[in-house]
Each structure stands twice: as C-alpha cells, then as structure tokens.
Image (tube, one colour):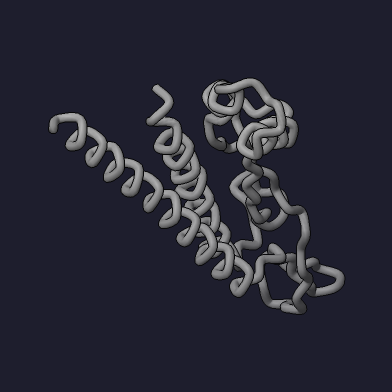
Length: 163
C-alpha cells in the first residue's frame, strides 16, 4: 500500500539506528580492552555500513519525479510507481572492524610487549563515539516523527472519508 511506504522507510531507519547505538555502546565499553574475545590483539572498533534497499538508479528516479512535478513531460503517475517500486528504506549492509590501535607505554600491564613495554589499545575516541551516539539518537527521533506524522495524516484522512 503506497500510503504506508513512509512508515516502512522510517521503521527501517529506526532499526538501523538501533543497531548503530548498540555498536557505539560496545565501542565505548571496550575502549580500554587490550585483548579481544579471540585472544589476538586489542578489541577492534565496530563501524556500521548501511545501504538503501531496493534502490537502483536513485538519482535517475528523482530526476524523473522532478520532471513530472515540474510538468516537463514525464508520464503521469510514473513518479508514484518509481517510489512504490524502489523506495523501501535502509538496512545494515555490513559491520566493519577498524584495525587502528594506539600504543601506550605501560611495562607493568599483563599485555605489554616484553621488549618495549608498550600496550596496544583500540583507537577509540570517546568524543567521536558520543558524537555518533547523539547523531544516531537524533536520526532515530526524526524517523519516529515521520511515523507519528504519517499515522496522524492517515487518521485524519480516515476521519474525512467517514464524513
């Protein structure tokens, strides 16, 4: 149903932001972890890579829709079809690991290199993670507002149809 597409897109965005927040929490919790679960080296920062779903030739689709809106010759209803067929939201494409480390001198640490006394820590910036956390929260809130507004518009439309 065409009227539910904004809700589908917003819900997929909310799901991605929820995963992103979990990864940020994991990164912050492991900012000082010198040994990964596998036992080889320090924890590696996780980075979420999202991708649009069912979205081939997005720029061409928008150009076509803009032409129709401007009345420049696209066939009537084409932009609606394009949006119905191609816009379905976003999803987590993959989760990458950042191999960057920072070396800190601490000869007494159990994971220190015996020769240099350096300890390998994950290169995680608390400031960057908190900034990402705020951005993810705001993205989630924006998507939630879309769901609420779409729902409200649909309810108003139903009320008008009852009259």
